[in-house]
Image (cartoon, rainbow, N blue to C red; front, top):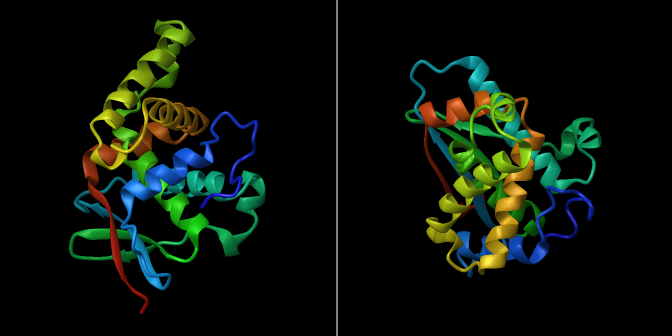
Length: 204
């Protein structure tokens, strides 16, 4: 599915075989090419803190940009390829969608779902943690929390131990890259995000 969507030397690059295995575990195998795949983020919309909500959406957008291009600044200058969302009221739903035949975009949404799903497992304050313990020890602590979350995830049951470790390293690298928005995005996720799931339908 993925065709070198991040630079080969990038520390937050997820190997293609791992991305494909995660996608197979997250979506039905018999998706028709014209199916509409929706990544649904269901949110409790009571007393939303606007700044935290904005940080959560910015995190999603920046991660999607990293997954679908090799140049985040270039992504920021090209509105046509940027992540687009629809909103449904009731219980507020943020909808990120793509047609099943757009395999690279679908895989990017699958990985984005994991990044957003595991935001609460990311330790909350990078700066203070670096003051309290040395960098290597803190990195191990972050990855341990992420590995525990990944091990408990049924969607990742098809991953081998090495693949799971590669996924954890990827997630950790992304969170480090997005340190600026992560605390507010994490706070929003813990307080307001109720579910993150895929919904399959026919194109409208």
